[in-house]
Image (tube, rainbow, N blue to C red):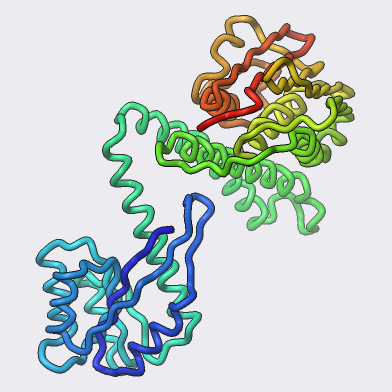
Length: 376
C-alpha cells in the first residue's frame, strides 16, 4: 500500500475538516499499479504554518487557499516553486477569485478547485493528480534503466500504435464526409475495420503492461494452488468467439486435479497467449489441442495447432522481445511481438521450460514444463 501526503492550507476549519472527511476512506487504484494508494491529511491554518509543515513533512500534494492570514497562498506557491520541490499544488478558491486561480496555474499550480466543491469534484481531482504523480515517478525510474531497451520499447509502441490510429482517423473522415453513401449500413465495413484496429491496440497495450509488470524487480506474487484445468478452460472460453468465426475446434484433455503453487494471474497469461496464438495462426476449419498432464514433479502444458507453422530459423527467435514472423500468411494477423517473450519470462521465473516444434503448412506444438512446487 502506497501513501501520499495531502497538506490542506486554509484558514477555514470547515474546509480542512471537510477535506479530511471526504478523503478518509478514499483510495486510488489503477490497472498498472501493483498496489492502491491511500492518503494522509495534514492541516495548516496559515501560510506560515503551511511552510513549516512543508519543510518537516514534505507533502506530495498541497490544497492551497490564497486568502490566508499573514502571507498569502500565492506566496506559498512561489516558495515551493523557487525550491523546486516535487510537490503538486492545487489552488482552492472562491468563484470570485477565479482570475487569481488561473494566474496561479500559470505560475506553477497544477490546477484549481473552486469553492464550494463537492466530494466528487475533490476526489476526481485527487485521483487525476495521483495518476500524474505515479506516472511522473515511473518515468523517473525508467531514466535509470538501459537506454537501448527503453528506446526499443518506445519505438515499437509508437510504430505499432501509429498505423491503427491513422487508419481509424481515415475511416472517421470517410464517415464524416459521407464518402460511401448516406445510409449507416454503407459504413459497416469501415466500422468493422476500425473495431479490429482498436482490438489490436488494446492487445498491444495489455502486452506492454504485462511485460512491465513481469520485469519489475519488486513485483509481488500471490502464491496459491492454481487449478490448471480451470485456467485453461477460461482461456478457451475467451478465444471461443474467434474460433467459431474461423470454424476452429478447441479440444482440452486434462488429467484429474493438476494444481501447482504459483501466481494464478501469471498462469492465465501463459494459457491466454498460447491458446490465442494457436487460434489466430490457424487455418479455417482447423483444430487446437490442449493437453495437461504431470511428469514427475512438473506440470506439462502442450498446445498443438493445425495452423500455418513456421520455419526453423523463425522458431529459434520467436521467444525474443518484439519478434513477429512476417510473411504472406501472417501479414493480416495483428500482434505486438511480445506475447511469447512474456510467456517465456514468466516460465523462466518458475525455473520452467518452453519449447516449440513447428512445420510450415502443418502447424506448431508448444510444450511448457513448470515445477509443481515453487519458491519465488
